[in-house]
Length: 385
Ligand code: AMP
Image (tube, rainbow, N blue to C red; front, side):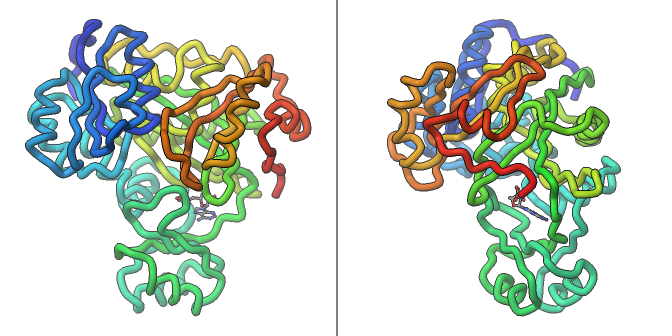
């Protein structure tokens, strides 16, 4: 994409998607003097509560999308399941950053893993496309067991996937997982899950945060440790891999690369997301420029300062009614930095907010210290499990 002059304050940034990622992006945009317009089918969306205007319609409503585009100076997204065709149409009206091409790659696990291995020269778990039972048999032979069978599209937070340890389990999973085609991936016995969030500008400047360690509970991100407690050479390798992917995509915007660190110290890319990411929420409190500000800066063509954390941090998600039910205790606990997403209904598994706890740089405690620091919230993270 060619370079354009930076957007002046009071320009309008359109964000497709109305969730917490849009909300926190809009809050960062407001601090830079921009005005956000949100496109979402949802009533009273978290992002709408902090934005100037909301266009409320389904993501495939082309006339509404076009009216939204015409009301903005630049368009970005916080939600990946909007159609790449729809975005491509918007790109005729206004610049869309990241580009529809980037979204298209990240929407399809097969396209994504092929791109990462072929174009960005990075490793992934072995994978194969599975459209029918014959391909499933071939894929099982090639990849072996245990393995993970996943839908290629529309999966998130562990939905649309099954770990399989036998041929019978694989066939049962094949029968239920929709839509086809599926992807069979080798199961990675990982030592840790890492992620790198970076921004890339139209001039090719890359600004990458420190890699973090992510711990999931019931397939949903539960806890992020920043920085990841890993040797510096692995941290640098993780950042180099993320940068190669951003360059190969010719990204303008923000990108999160989720990775496995296997027990031999190798990094395998699992997923990419061209938007702010839950594992980057700690940057709001621990860095002078957060992932959300970098997102807006990249989209608006502003300079991208090299991210530097002033503190180490632990981020704990508040998921479902139980954890958000602790809000009064959280507010009464000194040192916990609370973030509420403004969602009315706390369904099980729904991300309702998060808390951050800061530590001096280099002083991230061990598990017991972290458990004490995030009390009254339960600590589920057990290193090495
Ligand atoms: P995904 O939707 O691909 O991000 O997967 C959600 C979670 O499932 C990951 O964060 C991992 O904890 C686990 N997972 C996914 N794929 C694999 C794999 N190939 N091997 C081991 N664990 C996996």
